[in-house]
Length: 84
Image (cartoon, rainbow, N blue to C red):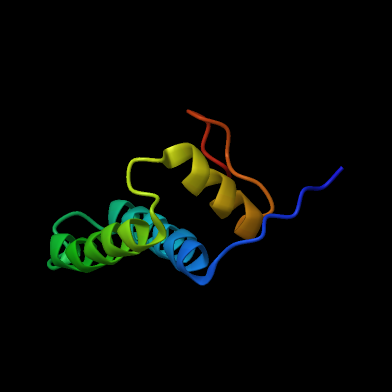
C-alpha cells in the first residue's frame, strides 16, 4: 500500500531545500581535493534549509522532515543506510 503525503507549501519548500542541501554536500564531498569555494557554496544552502525548516515548523523534527522527503522521492533511506 502506498501512502500519499499531503504537504503544505512550507513543508514542500523545506523538503526541497533539504534535498538541495543533501545534493550540494554530496557534490562537495565528491569534488577534487583543494577545490576553492566549496565551504562558501555550502553556507548558502545550509542557511536556506534552516530557514525553510523553521518556516515549516520542522526545525528539530527529523522524523517529520524525512517523511516529507520520502513523499517527494518515493521513500526515505533507512537510518544509517544511504540510498544508492
